[in-house]
Amino acid sequence: MNEKPLVILIEDDEDDAKNYKDIIEQALEVTVEILHPLPRSIQDLVVQVGSASPSAIIIDERLPVRSDAEYNGIDVADHLRNNDMNIPIVILTNYPNDQALLNREFLADMIWDKMKFDEDERIYLERFARWIGGLMVKRKTEEKILTLLESRIKDELSKSGDISENLMRIVAALHLYSEPGLELIVWLKSDVEDEIRLIEINTATTPTGSIEVFSIPPSDLLPFRMKIADVAPSEWRSIQSGEVGLPSGWTLEDSNEFDIEVLNEVTK
Image (cartoon, rainbow, N blue to C red; front, side, top):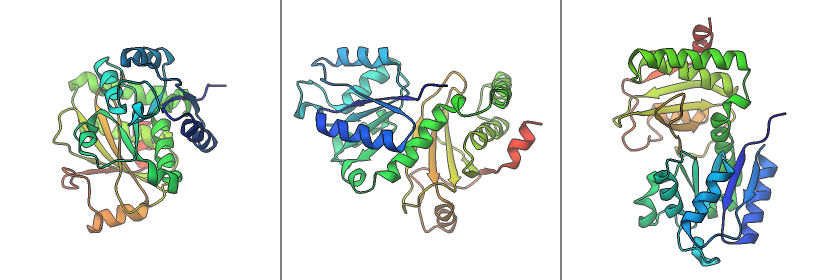
């Protein structure tokens, strides 16, 4: 049996950490390891995180409040990125609109508002589960199909190395195969170099009325950062009608749609 994905939780309040661990492990097929007590030095923390080889990290933003830590959560994200650790990072905060955090939010892949999490953690965890699921796709799909799709991606990248429509057809097929709830993937052209933007319409997603984007870092297989908006079918209809806006810089103009038929075409 495959091991569950490991999530490292960095939180200075031990009681809060245990509460988050219980909630997440009860909701998701992951193992949460609390890093406690926190080392004073951020360098020591980065070493501990690296040695654990986690699938994702959840970090409290205000770490020095109940610990001797000489750093905040966003500082940890900064150091991990500077050490070439493409580990998916979630920042936990009571102050999601704090300007100091917003100025550096690009270092994190998701930001969780603690108050909203306490009110309804389900919304955050559903998206986190798909995020982790996408990152751990090798553990959730049949090896034969996965190997075929990976081979097709490598072949396509060897031709030009660019983000082409044919490459995105194969990437969409991979996502549709690994997540049964997906019924449609929309590829949006990005004005950011080496970035892929997707809207994934998922029947298992709970509508929230707003569009939240999570990020998957570049990998050996796909050397591009992916930004994904996971939405319910009703939210997709609202986006199409203009009732719900897309994130800044995102547009449906010149976009491509891929449904389950692309999987059949790619794997012929």
